[in-house]
Length: 89
Image (cartoon, rainbow, N blue to C red):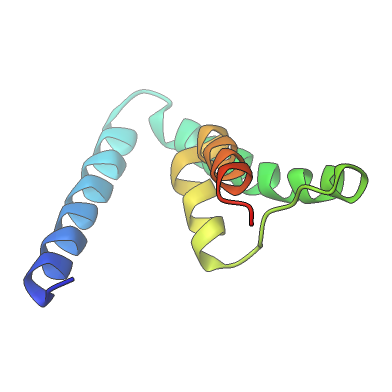
């Protein structure tokens, strides 16, 4: 991946993050809903790992998975689980 593409992707991610935060701050109850969604995603990752002790399915807890869980919430955790099942070797 070229340097220009990396810069463009980082800029797009920053703009999207600013748009989400701006909407959350200006909307009625938006900021509290944003915080609840972030917490829900992070707790879902740890819940998957607790249940994973019995089922054998788990997610790695690192900065990438925590950020994906925080940014995307429970649907992000479900997507990571599906990708884990699809690409399991």
